[in-house]
Amino acid sequence: MWFGVGNAAAGFFGLVISYAMGIAYVGYLMSKKKQEDQTLTWSDMLFDLTMGNVMKLREDLVSSVGHIPVAWAFLIRHFIPQVLLILFFLGADATTIDEEGNEVKVFGSYGGYATTYQVLGILTVVFAGFLVVSSLVFPNLYEALETVDETEKSIDKNNIDE
Image 1 (cartoon, one colour):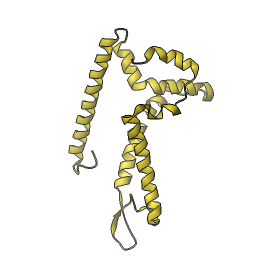
Image 2 (spheres, one colour; image 1 turned 90 degrees about the horizontal axis):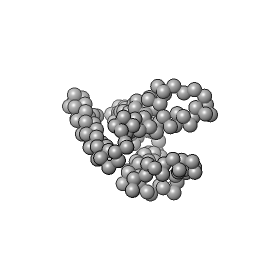
Image 3 (cartoon, one colour; image 1 turned 120 degrees about the vertical axis):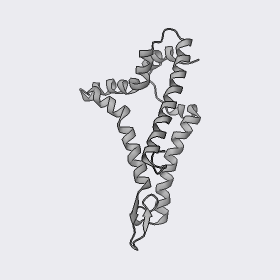
Image 4 (tube, one colour; image 1 turned 90 degrees about the vertical axis):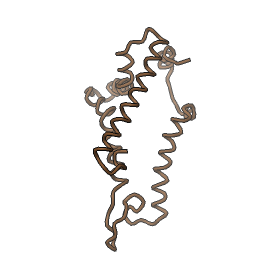
């Protein structure tokens, strides 16, 4: 959204409004969940939402690689993905000058490779996008690929929505 508007201030405003609407919807869903289960606290739900999975990953990695600071977990969760998205969109929107002096988009004309290689690269991006979107639309589609050990099953049994 930010890059497609043409005016950076308007794009940033749209980004903030979209983010605020998403946060409001998540807050609404959390309040519904809290009404259903009175044992939940807002602080526990917010921690699970904002840092829960990456802190579990940090705990798992500490046993094999040693000390990992909490700042690493924060950056992995809240900073690095957004930076990578911005870099991807900037790269996809970038232009360059070809041999004849014409301005061409970089996305789809990378390095002067043949069209078949360009199509293969674009299809790779489309396939990755398909995997993400299909997992959002059909969450059980990739259930067979999930590996959960028995200790996690017993712990997570209390947190399953029914």
